[in-house]
Image (cartoon, rainbow, N blue to C red; front, side, top):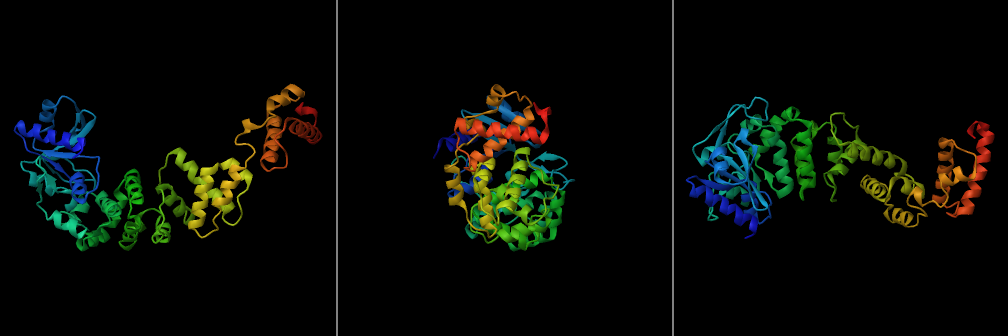
Length: 394
């Protein structure tokens, strides 16, 4: 037993010593029974958030509105949530209000899937009210109670079902699958940020192909704002992809829908890879492409090219990168400052043009990165530009 679990058990014991019930609940217990390491322990108890705060020295009010506080013990943290029942769900996502429940069973009834409603006490004894153990053995994802009601309460549960499928390799219970098919349109009620969080987890799972196939079968893929064509293409590809690479492939095979929200960094990377794909899918990478885009972006683009049926150029790209005469413009032995020192030319835009010409020729191997050779080339370009643009550049 590791320190994280031992400290968690001490939290259960402390709550019980103060007259309260307390259990490990949810994903940690599920993963524990499946032999999967988990770094996220949730605790359910009949102690109110205020009571928990009074018992433990270090507590953060992370979700007090919903009955949750976080207990900090040494270097570990534990989310502790009071037994509760949820009120009416007005937005297909959050309950209008919550009420604290009197019993553990009342609390478990409000949860999403049976595999997340199993609890363990301080003695590591399992308490199973919904035949969760059988579902674990059968490798089934099944809602607690009526699946249509569960998905109407919280539409995100539709995507969470596929997240657990991707992580665990479990299949959908037939009733649950039928309810997802019926209620798939509810995905439109979920914020795009929450959709992207779930898709990120789905695409990272060991069984992501299985989850994607099921999303296609149930019609959920149709609700994902232009991703369906790409997901259909990828469903049988036995290759590990990062979530951003999945999006890139989907966007190459269809248009980028404006609804998707990426960080500026990821947005720029997506555009860069898509544009580079168009340039290299039927042509070879060259030194300048590798220099401008960098090794990692070129390798990512090549990976996507290969998945889409184009030739594999990885070895060629790596050789180009290894043999680049410079890795940065700063590596040039003749620089813009040299032009300022050695010539009357002062216009920075023209100096920039000359340095760009030098950089291109050095990278492409038509000029050596040697001071005298670059100086001679620069002087010749200055003469040519003076003729083309006139003495105004001096």
